[in-house]
Image (cartoon, rainbow, N blue to C red; front, side, top):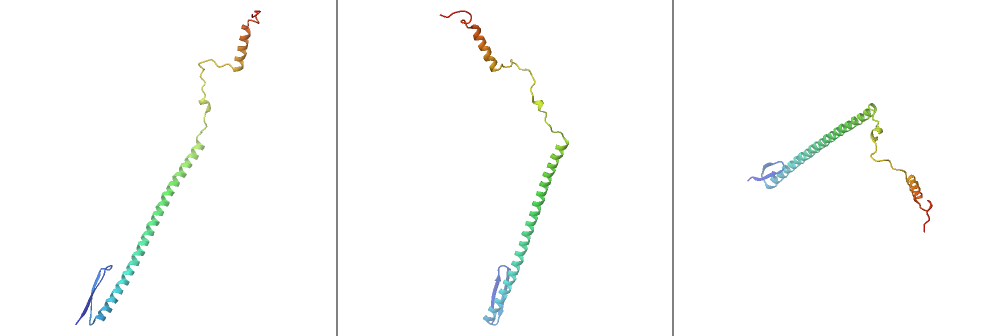
Length: 139
């Protein structure tokens, strides 16, 4: 009589029928095959993890290079802008003509008299009209 056992590895998608003259032999061969498949699966998983890690590192490196390149372009544009400002400041006369803001048109009304002058005029006016001073006596 021949003993047999069907074994399967889900990760490797491997299937095998192990046969032997007795149950112990079949079980031993099945365990050896399962261990071999597990070792192979572990090796494939490690290689896959290593490959994924390298891909992630390459992607991160590429992103960092792109970021550095973009920042370099921005800084170069800013530097060019500042250089243009400096060059224009030296080459072009940027002095401002403050006299252009002055309004030299004539006034529509007479200029005001100073307060002291108005006060004197008022006093003179009162003195001239005072009847006591003009020889009139008040009763």
